[in-house]
Image 1 (cartoon, rainbow, N blue to C red):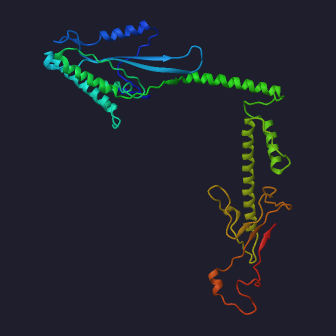
Image 2 (cartoon, one colour; image 1 turned 90 degrees about the vertical axis):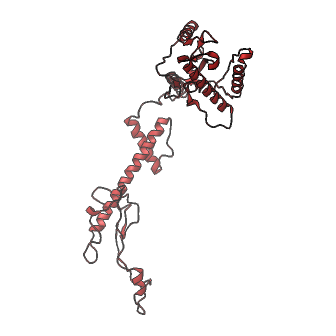
Image 3 (cartoon, helix red, strand yellow; image 1 turned 135 degrees about the vertical axis):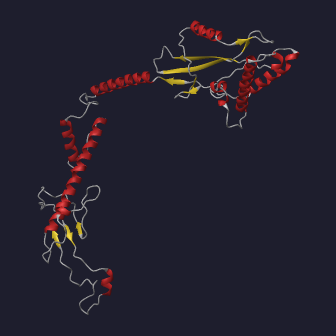
Length: 376
């Protein structure tokens, strides 16, 4: 006995027969009953020496409604072997061994029933026997359980009758909460969804024709001409020449976002190139003592994302988007300003340096400022 991937309890070596009619199901029931083991003893000439379980799986689906939902049910018909006292049956050998196993399995079943009837119990010992493992989905929970107790109204069997009635009373305390098991066939559901999508597309196309928008397409990819027109609209919207962008379908919305992303990446690349050319131009310009104040463009540092890292003392004072060509020429109309600050003393040296009267201290605004270079 094992559990499959869906959590259902199965028995190895047992196959399921598909029965389309009632006669086929009854034939399978009678065949299983014939394979049952019986024996002769003092109390019963045809005593059952094993439990018998007949499981019936029922799947129902509506013939009128063409939906993918179906109701799945499972019915256990169980005939338990009776509890026996060896002193009354006068059995020995293999028959006595069978009676001991039957009584043991019934004891495990009663322990499970007692655990289900006690609300304070958190663990139910379903795995103690094969019988309880197989019936764990039919005892309490999402099920309806009915027990039929057979007793013999004779004085010499009163102990067995009382034991059977006690077991039935414990079974009455088991709480059940049955619910309808509705399952959905994935293949049927996919076909239904595809049919619904086709109907909605046809209805939408009809609405567009009535409103004079039959040229709008909701399927396929955007053509090169459409992409060119969208890019022109987006660029006009960014500079303000286009007040708003018309959106007619979700496909156009996705394409507009792609165009915006492409333009943003292009502007980022131009900004990085302008910054690199500006740094190279400042580095190539000689300082007052005839030496370059920064490393060459081949030594320009970049961070992990590829952006140019400005050396110490260099600041870009205007957005570097005015570089006209790859040679580093600067647009005179817009321009880019890169300032290089001269090295100064530390705060500690400034505070300790002596000052002369009339010349101003190190922090005085009257002190002549060091020359700076600005490329415009």
